[in-house]
Length: 112
Length: 115
Image (cartoon, rainbow over all chains, first blue to last red; front, top):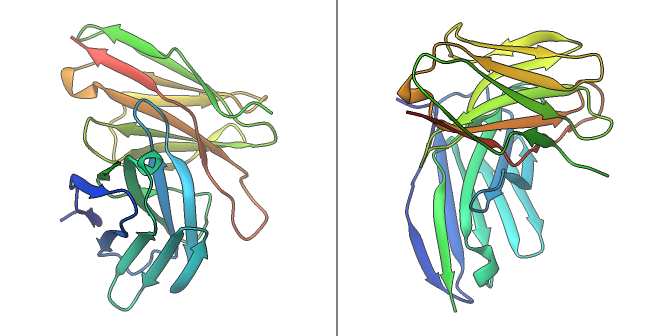
């Protein structure tokens, strides 16, 4: 069993839709939770990070962490065609600059 | 301010050969991590270098080795290449210590194809 599981999709939604991306994990030692966005032929770029449980909002993006259920989510409101990319969840242990463990990635397409 | 840079962009090798990939971290960063991303998969951690030493290592064989130079740039070496090594190799840089959160910035990657 992988430490981090992510539904690979693909996910196709119309412009303006609310998108929900999810990951589950098995290791309760994870403390930092991140969402990265990766465009084709590019490296991942950080969208959101959360330390421990809770919610965090940044513009159209909301990250949620439920440590009791070992479940994290990323919500995208008013999705745009420019949001079309692969979304990767990532987690790390005690230090934020340490080893990142990624999910498989979810391919999202937002069509006009 | 230049971000993380990697070279070369693409590389084609044959089985059994050796390859060296290079990474220059973001200005001010002292820690470099390497990841392997197979097609359709998330990145997998190979190892991390800090103060010119390997600080952490993932589940990769000894064929994968690295180096960090005094200017914090880094190399990833892979010996005895086999088909399964074909992937996008990503370099990420960060600050090794201090602060509550130290973001890892990724480079564009080197696409390695092994024939």
